[in-house]
Length: 337
Image 1 (spheres, rainbow, N blue to C red):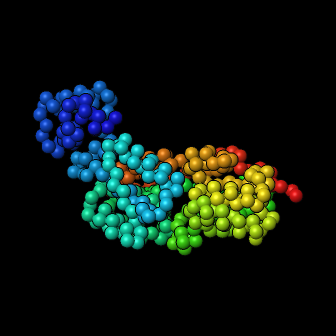
Image 2: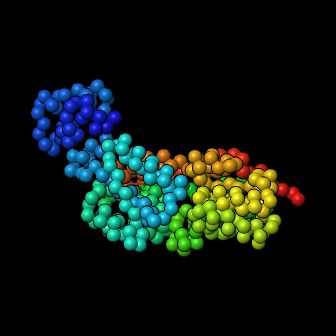
């Protein structure tokens, strides 16, 4: 239940409901009673959004996304949709703003022009200029992802280091002794993209713990790149029997490259990774993966941001999720021939 529904049932505007809740402007006694009757009937409890409204907020939050010219992965689209849905449930609008290169002008208009009450930032780097700029403006913000100074901001994130480590352990349990990590692009690695660096750290740790041979390759976010990368891996490392990956957009090309080499999944070759559940389930064969809980991440991010908008002095809060690996049809015992 939100302010919009209360306004509809009371026959008044949303602003009138907010004034009745906040006391910022006078509302007639008859109108106030009508609104209160609806609130009592529905059991509505004014939350942090109502507190923000009484301070004259815009009821709009910003979502800083990757450049619009870049192809979005299914996971990224899931994050956008989850934030929009969670914001709508809190009676908030969302302003999308790309960032990076020429798009930084859009980002600056959002944070400098006070068009929004707060900002959620996606695709965080270990050293992120956007985070530094938001700290300067004192505009409330939350990250989907985190910098290398994680305690200095509020964020929600996946534990990529642990998740890739779990993938390696699962593959090693199946007898695989030569495993590759197919990471995100070399450009993202060079830019300090957090998930890629943490996946690399988890892969290095797990291969060392299990005493297996690890090979690493960066790959662009598309099927063609996945085909090319895995083709090179198979040519250069003929004893390779498994892949762990966080590059979901490249996975269809990986499948094609394995098939093109005359191998079957999972009979001859295994793949495990981190991906959106819908994406993983609809691949053929369905991917063994740690399913990304995009809805949960988006809802947590909006909740944390509302909390900071309502009280900017509230201590920073961090949420790190590590979903279990869903066993599907892309992992099996290592081939012995």
